[in-house]
Image (cartoon, rainbow, N blue to C red; front, side, top):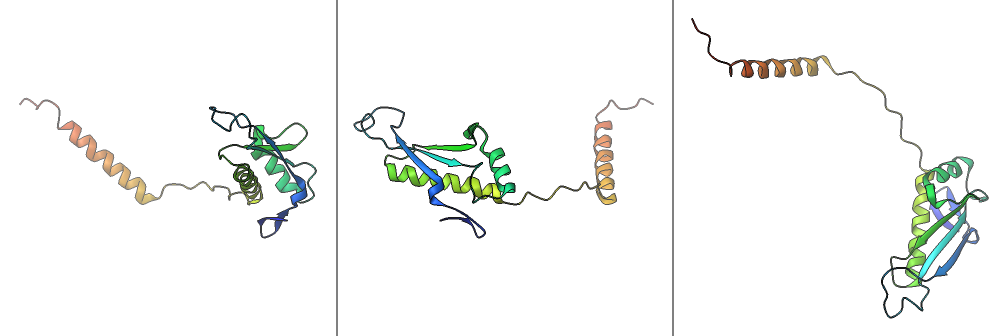
Length: 140
């Protein structure tokens, strides 16, 4: 079991890994070593997720989610297969943790206080007076 939050764990059998050759500039190993990892996690059929987490995860996944509801995460940042595998798993855990987090509280509209209104008007008056002094002097 992979611990995501204190109340949520994912079964390791729900995650499948596929290894492929990494893209990018060539090197001595790039054409012969399959170091990139494609992680697959079936979001829609996972018994570990609640309906709330499943819905939020589908929205957060965006284009990484297939039409069948399978989440695909590709990792090829590192040179070794094991580090890429751990990287993909960490990204999955972060995504599920974000989906499991409660939404932020709704913002309640507030009005400016009387003091802030008076300070704003005093500042405007002061600026107006300064600009009025820039004009030509009055002729008498």
